[in-house]
Image (cartoon, rainbow, N blue to C red):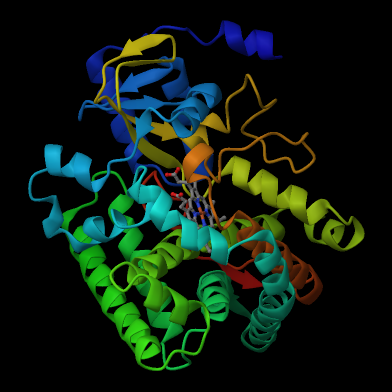
Length: 414
Ligand code: HEM
């Protein structure tokens, strides 16, 4: 099979600049993963590196994306890079805030900011949290939701469970005061990361900027309180150890942990409500929930694009590239690479395990991968138990844009 597909994929670009620009424009406006399949195939057929009108390159192959994520000479669009290339960028509080998170930092800043987060999310902490916080919360949210569906006929699972649950879990990890409005925090986290979408319109950037400022002010109030009245907990330690930077640790957790996990849960809910037999297998087969999570992360990873810049002259996709070249690694396309995944556009939880790129690779590998998995498996077990025979009451509503998988509404009925 792979031989047949290889024959149909030219190794050099076959499209002229105008056709490529049209293809990139189409890619930017597609959000439904079923439609992305066609665009990913066309991009791949245009060659391993597809030029964009803004002089970046789209990287579609699995090995090339992995190289970009894992190799040290690929750098983030960090504050120092932006100071050199994007005058005025500090006027945007959302971009400025993201550049204070490890996601947009390189060593040595990256190392220092990542360390306390890694210490807060060790496998042992997450295993304890899964039993004491994640599972009880997932059970509560899903059973309340099921009761509402029985009462009202149908309800939106994204607004009721998929989005609030990751915020509630982080609130539990951090011991956030009860006075913090979690629904507000969820909305602000989601609004802020929209700035990462390629070519966000000014209204989206303005909203992201407001969300960054409001969140940072909220985190600062919480930390100031812990500084005045330390309790010996995680937030008290962060507040004391790094008075300037602690608020960015909170910003990192909510912006990296809420939109991504919410998108994963929503995708899983859609799969459970549309593909017959999946929910029943969760109860019957001990490792099926894990395989379902892996296949959802492959088929439509919550973060579909990671952007990097070449720190020095390098080579990618068989081509020499100059230092300073910006690339967008299309993780979503890499996960549909026919050289690695048989029948790549088919959602198949029974496919053999593969090393996925959904959580990144190398220096920036996701610190919340275990926590996200704990939430996804607890959510699906609750779903299978409480919502047997669940179906979609209406088609899912999706956020436009190619970079982030995001179902904003998913009405479920029984
Ligand atoms: C399904 C859910 C999730 C997905 C798909 C996901 C995906 C990713 C990816 C792709 C990266 C690397 C980005 C890059 O290389 O630029 C990353 C980094 C990160 N993630 Fe996650 N993530 C998820 C959930 C979480 C959660 C729940 C947390 C925290 C509680 C979290 C915390 C982080 C942090 C702190 C980083 C930055 C690591 C660094 O730059 O050194 N993530 N995540």
